[in-house]
Image (cartoon, rainbow over all chains, first blue to last red; front, top):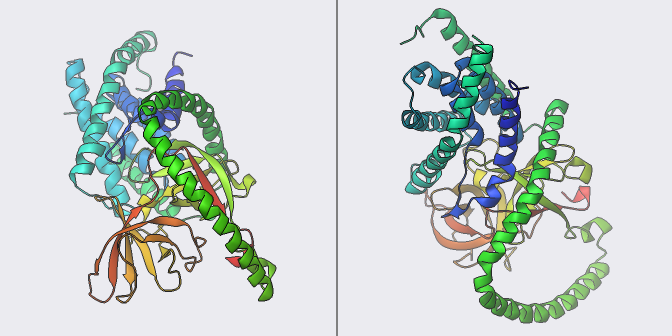
Length: 173
Length: 289
């Protein structure tokens, strides 16, 4: 049960992200603010636990996002899995503090959105525009809100995975 | 750094990217129907989203009401004016409608021709949104069981919002106007005209300018009477959308890139954010499309 609770929480976050969040978050200059709940969760799992877990969760929940909203399947699955994996590979070590991890998450968020927009651009579904409106509102505000959410769930996530590690050892490796 | 050039990992990564790009390429086209596992999954998650969406709306509305309470007076004034106009217009409308029916009878219109503009508007709740600008889409709680089909037009109270891009049994996905893009394989350009000058004005809307938030109408004849402030509606000539749905108002008009035709910028009538409920437009007779 304790192992599977993360699946349930991520699924709940996925549902809430699409159905509840847009009702409450405001629109600024025609842009609906949004928080990437699931992406934040997956990246934190990568940072605080194991890259194989992050890969698995990232591929599964990314694929769910593709199925629900995407114009093609596989973009979010690939990118979320890859980002979760790489963030562990590059940044997970013994000297993690909360402040440093939040900074690392910024890299993760920007990398995720960059790769997704490259895929959508290559397949001719999206023209990126580097106007202030997009770069500031859609990307920076999104990253800021994601960070806020990450700061809230950071400590509980870390505690959960410390407990898991004591009890079961590493999950996949 | 960790031995990340270890052969096996790079190989797996390469196969992964190949696999996913193949999947993307195979699923990108507008498939007429989704496979049943996809439909089942979408309906299941959609059901969950519908369940949590309802209380969220109630709470959201409650907060919204408190914000709006300050401008109730002005709103009341404006609505009263509109009501006056509405009463006048409806009297005129009744008369014109009766005239229209009488003339159609006199000209021996067939049953399907007469039903052509009798659209059915299916009310639908928006239960979730995608939340990114690569594929701006909504999920609504009507599906193929309710008679929703691919490529039907979707409007809000204010005007055209988008089209149905995927249908499952109990839900369907609405692709918003943002997706309009001349380089995009899956976007559907629409034929447009000006309300009140349906026979004289014509243009194609095939691009949404994201940086300005305006639609771009192209291929307008230089002699076209279209001017700033005109209300642009779908013309129905594209055979995709029914005619007469409000798209927006003309904001500016200038000579196009090649100097042969004109280009106009159009302010969409509908707000594409914070959509709560939409209407799916069904054209009653199949032969008419």
